Length: 169
Image 1: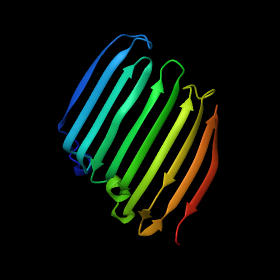
Image 2: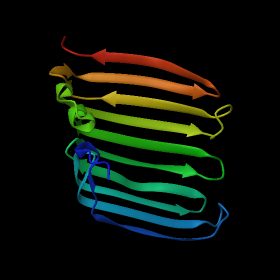
Image 3: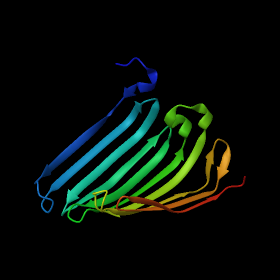
């Protein structure tokens, strides 16, 4: 409806959702989303799947993965409804920033792993830790062999606990 090619979307797939209950301890929910041979904002999506489940007070992200023209990713994790603790692991493979944002000068092949653990949703009292690691990546023709970032959050304070980069520059 915008007439802009970069805003074009062609989506093929299915959604399934089911559940019962309203209290965290007896809530049961299932959600599945599958996209295939689709295109969104100029990015071709070969496959994109989400599968989540809520049972026994735990929301489980069982599958969140995609294969696209801009790269591949997968993610899994959980959130405990009763104590508000969470864990998320995400992996990006062969991510091309140029394809993702439409700027051909930013050719890349980025491989990252991200692990995020925490407890609490209130920004004043929550705590979390974040680890980002890359391996064998390229950004604009430059090799990036190893990037490691460690961070944490305690209440309203955010910390960078460590950064290291190894590159043959």
